[in-house]
Length: 270
Image (cartoon, rainbow, N blue to C red; front, top):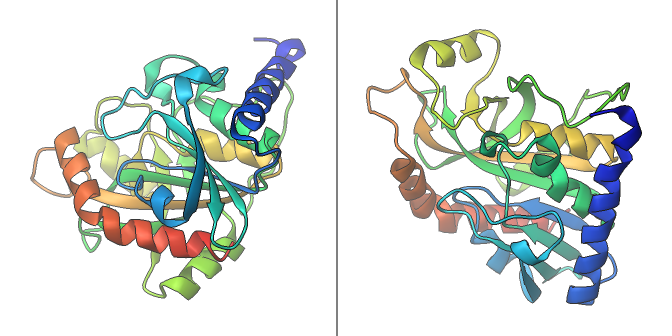
């Protein structure tokens, strides 16, 4: 890719945003949510869904490739009178569609007017105290994908990428919330015990296959980013139990009502 066609990514986002505005009847959204494994029920708790679109109908979006993710984009009127765009169709880097596809939803959300981005995920935990079902605020990330959503000589400061203001707000809702550093691996395989130890040694306490690239793209377009992970399992080598996606789904289902209510209350204060 060359610098000259980087604008195409934003043109595609604008096209998708225009489609969303036309189909939902909502000219502008205030906040966007990417709901990962275990977090889907939050969309029903933050307010009234006034429009639901199939992701495959929206330009540039595709159906989710992961069990446990929904394939819709919803416009929600929150109880506080704000407009939330709920992106249930996340594209992961390991799907091989390119980084532009991974961050297309983020850029589309920004093009709809959203100033705040809420990123959620299900992940592996490196802290044995974080049992499956524990929500953990993301304070920073380590991008281990060897990729970036930015192209050419596009330099963006990532200091305080994950808003300290919003983390403080979340702790007003639940003072027990802990925080950690999220490392994004490429996947789709789970990390080896040695890779988990490597991540631990370089400062990570959470490992997964999403979020970091999306957060970078959000900062580039000026969005304030709030990240929260659901620890669905202890990472490889931290526990002797073999990893499976079924375990991720089951942990998300078990924690879903509690963490969704937590996220809905946080969203209400944004």
